[in-house]
Length: 254
Ligand SMILES: [Fe+2]
Image 1 (cartoon, rainbow, N blue to C red):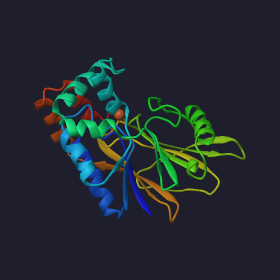
Image 2 (cartoon, helix red, strand yellow):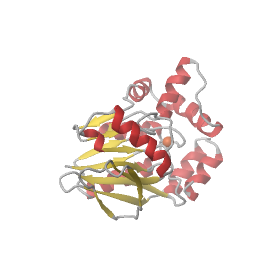
Image 3 (cartoon, rainbow, N blue to C red):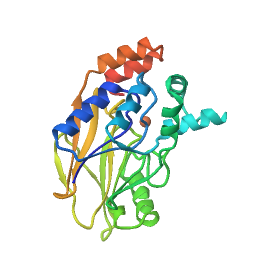
Image 4 (cartoon, protein in one colour):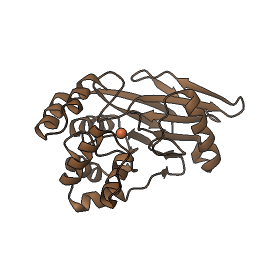
């Protein structure tokens, strides 16, 4: 079974289309998203429709939960740029789309083989940026989630690709180097936390859409960094009246 896993689409239709095209080209059997379908960019309706049409299995991110807060009259824990985009999104989404987005689960176990989380196994709002933080996340993954699916999980939220492995015998966390197209073998007995970055607002310094491809028959994972037409996305952000920095950051990969 071959899976294409991506995250943090953030209403970026061009980024999402690039990832879906690559998933198809690579023969992915299943499509999975680690949350934040909406927010920041100008195409929340189109992105929501496309993930549903393609049968992408999704969890909620903090931006979908922001819709819940807005409706309840609570103030979402977001910066002003994210808040501006959340208000734009809430206005743009038909009620049926909104209901679907907020009803997504926070955690997904896929075929009893692995998990999807947004931020970390212990907290959907938590950022994992280094092996130290990954160590705490492995602790939660191993103690809070039953085997065999706790061997592996995919996350997003930071908008930067990263991969960590944990060897339970040596009790050691290792950060794996990620190079585009590099194939990483998944070793029996090791546990993995794999951050698939973002297909809608990558923050690793280059204007790309990222995704991971995993083959569980051959036990490997690869990361893909895809060029896409971010200039069109920028134009749409500006035409929608969203804050200018949201357009600028797309071109800088930040
Ligand atoms: Fe996000």
